[in-house]
Length: 407
Image 1 (tube, rainbow, N blue to C red):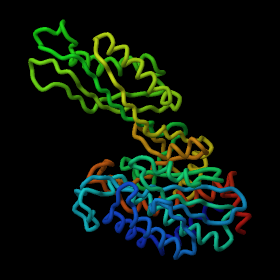
Image 2: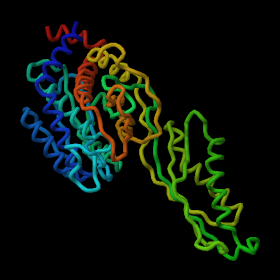
Image 3: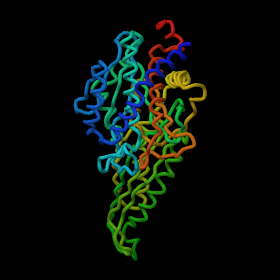
């Protein structure tokens, strides 16, 4: 019964606000801002939340904000959206094309932000009517693409007192009206590494009198990934892939230095924590066999996003209540990185994939200048996030429980 009531309330709310939310998304799309430079975006959100009677608190750097809806009595649930854009040129021919050279919302963060704004306005109405059974913390996070914005939020108390957290991300492979979920790892840890090798150099006619640095570097490129596949549980999906290699300037000269750069991705948190020391040990072993020096510069990125099973069940139930049977579909694990993972290392929660593809339409790809969405996804996202917040606040069955409270 409550599911039908909530759907009706959301339908009425979105009948009045959906076009305004689409316009808000297009405004953000036209004015993208990169990590920790989201001043205009932050101000636009602050204006809308303030007009709704809420009291947003901007983070100390001046970008990103948190805002509570409802009282402090009862549980506290957080909803998070990322607000930054990518350093890419917008290649679309649309009226809302980016007006900022070299920057565009090619990952859907403008949609995430708009979904959370719409959810905020709906929940503010619920709170004003005395129908919110707890508190919802709204997190409009800066700098996900850096990454690091999640750590900024956490450093300033953004998840203090929060019992559970939820987020979503556009998925252009999933149709509008559907949401992809899975318990356990849904994204990957993502680190960057750089290996610099050095040796005496020499003539290619006499490799035995020097250290054949290029050959040694080639062995590092092939043997490190191979050795990792035998030293780490394959279920961890630890992957080392090279993206840049450089050594030498002449065909007949053995160079005295070279460099290789790549990424390490992993779905298992324990394997991720162990990866730097293991890679350093393997690197020293290979380099020593060929008489060269090897220096490892390992830069931590983000841990894997590991969804809490109970939180996934809450999200799934909420989505089906407001979108209908068949709305929830299983989703594959991804080796992409997402700094929502930092929140889930501290509190339980779940991360969902929001369908943004028009049925039978074009399948775009994220991080491309042509990326776009079917804007009907905005209303779907509001429905999902609002219902999930209410579900998580009641913790059991939970929308049926709301019936008695709202009767």
